[in-house]
Image 1 (cartoon, protein in one colour):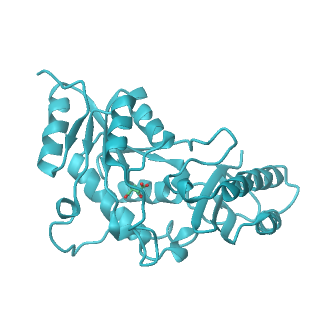
Image 2 (cartoon, rainbow, N blue to C red):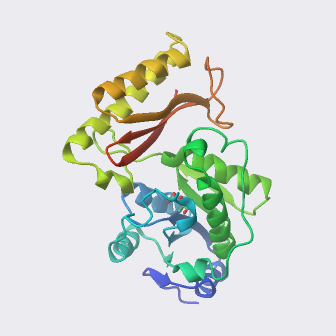
Image 3 (spheres, rainbow, N blue to C red):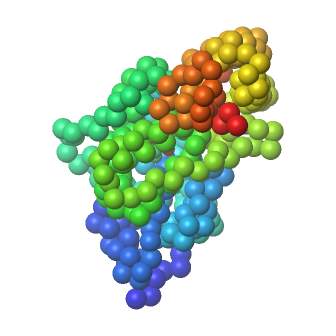
Length: 286
Ligand code: PAF
């Protein structure tokens, strides 16, 4: 079978399954990169991650309404389909699934995938229903494409743990690969929402990464407890101009339970508000 070298754009589940089956029939494995579009270097790194593992990269672009709260930015979420297709093709992606809402949700959904435990803290209480929306749409995307591997960024670290937990618990026959956060040269984590920042906010935003690094060093060296280090960092962020620190904490890297003293693999993880932008980020403690 002759496989297309270019990016194939598919809009329906039937077309997606045919496109994936064609690569499978040629003996290839497939890696799915689920996205909501407005692609940046972070998304491109997920496509490269799939290529590096020998997978045929397939991406999805769907701004999923069920993971946005009533006062969140669903309507304003940046959309640039033509630009996204161009970036995917340049990165070496071979299939992109870009369904409309009726293709993803043809009938009112009576099923919700709910992951407990890892959703209890951090963003969970601040975004009620968000992880149900994510877990449900990611389940649908994985079942639609049936990839060998799914690629997700560590930037959304809690989301990554939710998806890993769900795939493990439901024995979904695929591997979930977490890829490192891609940062701007000055350290700001890349995010589709960074475009909401004004020039002044963009400068202030950098403090988040700096303060998280200070916390990581302090708790790694045992110079203070996790709660002391994160309280000092939150205070510094508010003094620097952040409007709110929803949370800034040190958690177990897998269970996401808070640490007071680090006794195993840990992440410093934070969600903040700066103007109209919600910024989240996380780093490993060591
Ligand atoms: O991380 C995202 O862009 C979204 O939450 C995802 C995983 C594509 C589900 O809509």
